[in-house]
Image 1 (cartoon, rainbow, N blue to C red):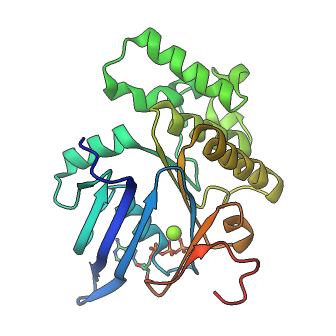
Image 2 (image 1 turned 120 degrees about the vertical axis):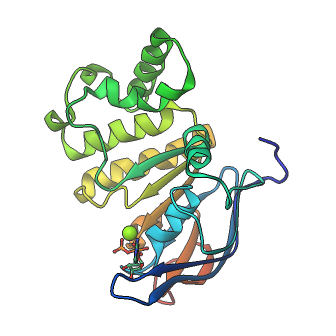
Length: 240
Ligand SMILES: Nc1ncnc2c1ncn2[C@@H]1O[C@H](COP(=O)(O)OP(=O)(O)OP(=O)(O)O)[C@@H](O)[C@H]1O
Ligand SMILES: [Mg+2]
């Protein structure tokens, strides 16, 4: 993929309109413009229903906008086919979700190896890489466990190991601490901070809580599908 700018992601005049089942349509994103440079840690914050996940799905190449352009590593991905989008996702993005999205009947090791399935790596290398990732999240002794045998925080660590396995430069996390108590949540957030700081991994994290957004360096606040703040994380959320 040819790199044309140092922006990892760039959204230009993004609009998203969903058709409604009852007829008519609903516009959820209105002229969204922002870009993220390599190495940033950005929180996208906003109330429930403001369009955060819709925005994240576009950034993650899980969905396409109704209009506007979305560039990932300087390449316009708006017009790609679903298969092409899947390749882009697999090669460039590590996903972390609120509900972990682990395969419940597969071992921890299998789950972490998943993104490597399409890479054409020999089995032994896949196993080795997955073990390294489990070590990085402190779960090297749990590789043969099933996700159901782990605590929420541990499950999210497995999900992070899986996100890291494909060696992405970008991690997209949608409410990554939403299913965790605050202690486990803080551990996960500290871990993100470390990944960003030590490995230079770009992180875009969605949250509806200011206390969580504070872990990021930059805050993009969305209200009713429009950006109403984009800048350094303010000291408090009074003016958001
Ligand atoms: N596939 C869809 N079809 C129709 N409407 C949708 C679809 N996905 C989302 N919406 C609508 O878009 C709006 C924004 O939803 P979105 O999931 O992006 O909000 P959110 O900010 O992530 O909220 P939450 O904090 O509750 O997760 C909502 O009104 C929702 O009903
Ligand atoms: Mg959401």
